Length: 397
Ligand code: FDA
Image (cartoon, rainbow, N blue to C red; front, side, top):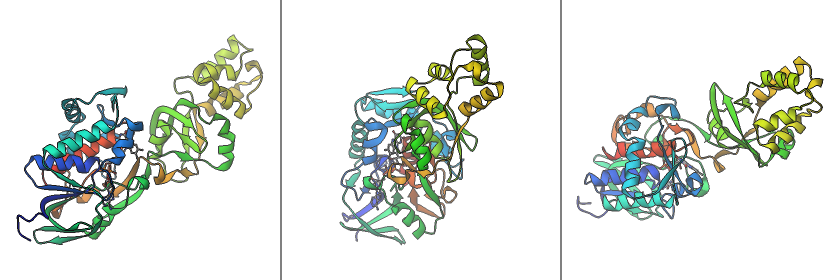
């Protein structure tokens, strides 16, 4: 193959998702000849389904504390060099309308398509080529780079970037390809598991909670000293909603989660005062003042708290307060990769450069985005990692 042959590239990126497309545009603007390969029929499928179709594309309050990793300092450098503000400037330059739904969480006002179009436009302007429906058959190292055998022929490149994502939502094209390539080159993979995923419950508990199905209430959920104060949703399958998704990333099989159902209340004190001032009042009435009425009613029925407060002894009130403030649940599992937003674990970052995302003893091989062991909290942090790691590799590859 000659240097000018059409199947020779400076940079080949495997994966046309958030990280791969960002990397392609960045490398393309540096004058590199870039090709993005993907086996799916369309690029950026997860971008399109993200944020309920409106893509929570960044979080203005994102800090390294919003990420889980076995090597927590790794993500700091890339996140510092490409910030949420940087991505927001890009969004504004493309005239994409957006809104802050919760503090710091930026969503498209219209559609997640706007973010995908932005990335595809950037790739086009930067001269990066995107080839979909391409199966990668093998990757081999050569003295001057890599040989990538694909369903569209043999391709060569100086730098190879793996942006193939994690295992979540296999129906959207997720595969373990990135991990296989990492293993092929002798890299260590940290155990993977589903994150930001709803919990499933034992049949008994699921049955008991079924009257609460479809109702959401603000809670403080905790596990392993991590707390998330966000809504919880009871579903016909188990527990979901932002607080449950967040805590699922810290949960291991067999762990209990503690749920404070009244996080703004001093429950025992308030119940004692209510019993004194309004002895005829009920626990159901107290609950209804602090949580959605349907949830209050169903939860009260579930616990069988009947009769006026004056009938409750101090020890009863203490017990009730302790249950409401720390309802302990032992999930039977999670819904797994089928519905998980992210994959925890992955390529061990101790083997990668935090500046360039390249493998330390193989500087032309890069791993970016979800395939590496960096996982964000819910709220736009995962895309911010995809942008930041994509830019870091794109500036070097
Ligand atoms: P991504 O998965 O986006 O891309 C990987 C690409 O590699 C895919 O195009 C895939 O087809 C391709 N590929 C895989 N195997 C291959 C193979 N063998 N050969 C060739 N190509 C291959 N995050 C956030 O910050 N805000 C949000 O609102 C949401 N919402 C959300 C909703 C849902 C339902 C999900 C599932 C996820 C989110 N996320 C999110 C998480 C976010 O989507 C995720 O972190 C990023 O898409 C990761 O970007 P990557 O580019 O690393 O992987």
